[in-house]
Image (cartoon, rainbow, N blue to C red; front, side, top):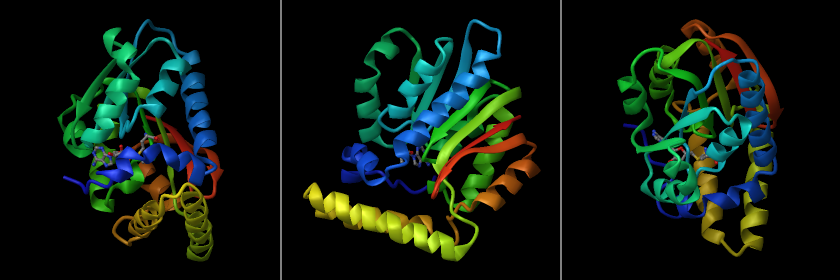
Length: 239
Ligand SMILES: C[S@@+](CC[C@H](N)C(=O)[O-])C[C@H]1O[C@@H](n2cnc3c(N)ncnc32)[C@H](O)[C@@H]1O
């Protein structure tokens, strides 16, 4: 079981992050484009896509718009997020386009049968995992994908150079202070700064080069960084 980092106010007010993280929406758009491009070349009537860390369903909606043939399995361990996504995607639930599960990410992927999914997608979730947990998780993601299927992850990959990473972190903290004080949400400043510090812990930090190397070791091919603005990145790969 990994830490729960979106309990309470962090989950309830999560939508405000788009204001303090100016690359967030652009990054999401690129994730959607990546999924769209991949499926546009594929024949088939229905594709099973797994989304881990679906949160309130903002990313999930992008996938439905990317390709009408997508059927989503959406997973999150936070009850507040599950409440939000169920409300947001009510229509998709009724039309059996999405199945929503409240579960721990590693627990869920470990129990998935091999080669079940046509794609794995995720937004801003994997960087939250501790390194040991993340490695086990990624091995399972590889296992549950069908051959030649897509891995697309929009996430916060730290710069490999600590000095550059420190500059980016300083900039992001400045954004939290500016935006959340303007919104009169001072407690969110502390919560997001603590979140940022946790992300940078040696047992958590997800640096780009080691992440790509680990993926290669697991067996992923054609690994590409298709978007990068500061830590905000989209990585695409093929099983
Ligand atoms: C930063 S939010 C991203 C939400 C959405 N994908 C987006 O991009 O806006 C990360 C989500 O991952 C979920 N999460 C984090 N660790 C998890 C875990 N170990 N198992 C399941 N969900 C997890 C959190 O509850 C949260 O909803």
